[in-house]
Length: 391
Image (tube, rainbow, N blue to C red; front, side, top):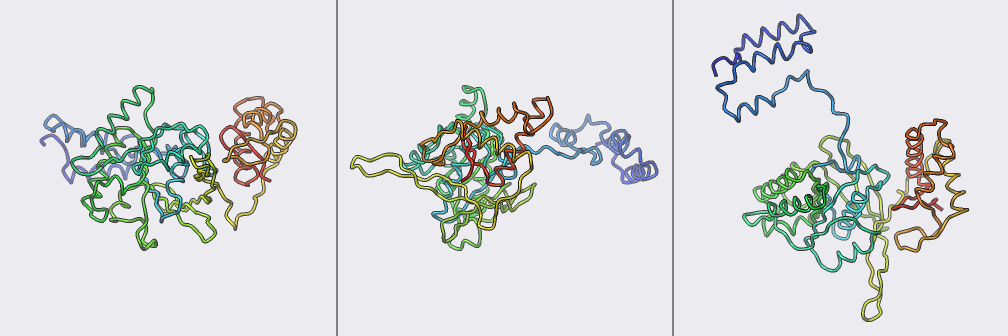
């Protein structure tokens, strides 16, 4: 590599110069320590040039403050996650609930959500899954309900990306979230406890992520010893960005907790119960039921105090419910009267109760802060396009 100045003494001289002249660390970095390393690149092969082009002087890096997410604090865009728990812990119900909220662009667990296009791969299939989807309010995501294999020479990863690209081209938008339920069903007979087989699965999942840019979530099980985490080889946990563990107490309350987050805090929790709902009657006149995720308040959490502006928003909501409230007879809704979320928001912004500013964007931000406060304090329930006061 003639002409590429990388002699140790040259680097030492550059470092010494930077020590004497601090301004050179920022203003002269590209002309100093970095520029002479680039030098004459004519003899470098294409792959080496690519690596050289990706090499950056550390002082030139800026902090990344905006984190791209689907569900803030829980699911990042283009990441790989595992949601796991023991049998009967509501894994599939929670994964479906998350997918539904992302597809709708509605807040989940009092966390902000960026709306995205979703594909749910129900590899276990069956009529039970169709019933679960039927209980949701106007779902807006795609479902693939046949077994697929994502390991070995017969992996469906490549044709699956083709299908996703086709749907993206037809629909005018790509996919943002892909749920795979369950991991065991897409292993294709391979061994969850074997590092090579897990590596093969991860490679195929990375292919799907790379081509689509989507967040991929695996629904998985614990082993016989639930204290040892997700079933299978430990290399799976090393490869994922986010891990969500489910646990269930004796009273039927389920807790989802973020136990791994590659570049963020852990410990976020979402508590819920599975509420049985009736879909209709079968051919013998017996009820057909399924379950929905019903957020619960942890026993140790009381109602937090809210700001004066939030109290005004709540007072206005109570007034609107008194004047125009209606009971919406759907199993996933509270039984008492509520009103349109848009009606409440527009009234708060129009009447100037929350902000003295004349700027609409400022008023909207003030309303959003009040809404989040009231949801966090468990004073209101927001579902789909409706809002209720908690009784």
